Length: 362
Image (tube, rainbow, N blue to C red; front, side, top):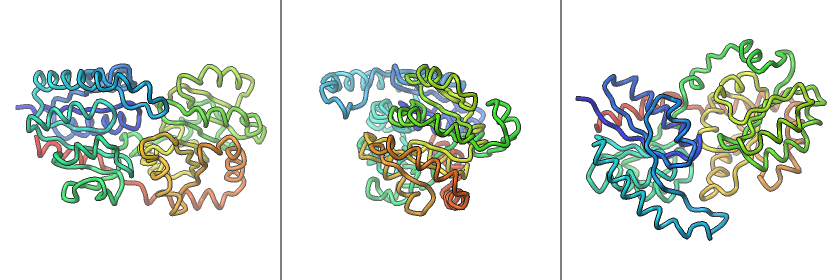
């Protein structure tokens, strides 16, 4: 008899791609497993998950808006509606286990599952756990963490430190660099900068890079820039005369960009850090300051304190981005030190460790 598993969560690539990595590992370990994703209507998982070959159902749920509290007026109504929808999903699909990966949709599904005594597990990517996962963790069977020292948030006996699940194409990193350069139309003899602000883009990083991109390009540095959808048109228009700048709104082939990059600028989401630790390249982190409990700064500082990355505050990125980038390109010794020190943070096979435990519970 097949085992039926719900994977709930999303909102950003930092939740979606670990979820897909877990699903792929489940399929690899068990040929008869049935997987249903549950996300939030209107969020990127509703587009990205089907492209990975999985069915997804959307709930009418939204998270708390921390920058505009007036927008939270309808939140209680949406939560009640999503709880009702979650009960129906569980009734119809009859899961053996429910997996929460964070994001709006994980709470209603896992809360409903726990009330029906269906086993639940959590995958907490960040070094500072969110409120939903702290609540759900009390009744979860296991909590897989991306960072050590999570006893402050969860029952110690339920914590399994695995690191964060990373897509196999990045975990293996068997990328042909010549093919990667060719994919982007770049020159293999020149230095390359890769800038991205996560799957949704990053307004402050985009604005800062746009203000100095010509100065960087003048130093014969090639630039791959993932902007997010809202900034892509402006970035492409402003850089149309620069042959050594390649702009993407969303780049699925991240492994190719990682392979050719000499220096990387990134937000400090847990998935990005997990991937960059495996990639082992010099990184400048610009943590998103409005993330819950400022967890991106916590994430980044775990590496910065070990001289494994550099950091720029979001409020200072416009002032400091150019000088930080140029200093790294000028000082190969620092590049080598950062690349060496970030690699010990890499943890592989988290997806299979998590999938194995899920199947044991099913």
